[in-house]
Amino acid sequence: MDSLSFLTKKGPEIESVFEELAALRIAVFRDYPYLYEGTISYEKDYLKTYAQSARALLFAVYDGLKMVGATTCIPLRDETADIRKPFEQAGFDLDTVFYFGESILLPAYRGRGLGHRFFDEREAHARRFGSFRMTCFCSVERPENHPAKPPDYRPNDAFWIKRGYRKEPSLRSTLEWPDLGEVISTPKPMVYWVRDL
Image (cartoon, rainbow, N blue to C red):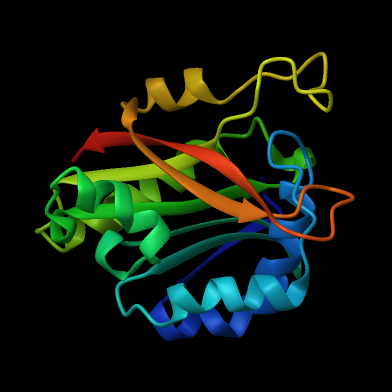
């Protein structure tokens, strides 16, 4: 841990690390359950949402000059329509919900408490505004018998529950991306996890 350093960027500042963040997202999300066949150009387009929100946050971990972990969050109101939609349909006040984006870490840096640090940083950021009552994120749902599922795969559910989050089956959306080896994007079912601040 002594070699690690931390970087915080907000809103438009996030654009300055798009290249690094995009490469890290592609590297981490290649693994099950996301199996994401990403491109830098698609990633930069996706990340613009965060750079356009003044209250968005990026918290990144570096080992020397290399970004090895990162997490983002943004007011739900500033997220894309696909992410907002289930909350709008359920009658939530979007101005009271803070959305947590990715929480990504290269395998060699896991098990050092950085996952907890990511949640601490994002929850503290959301609390600073004084108007948010809930935090949330979504995760992909793959079938139990998915052929690419590793035999030793362990979902993050226990970790998220320990952090005070609960799966909310009534809040669902569909996001699209190309799986490994695919050229076109295909729909993926997403379920939301929520926690009262």
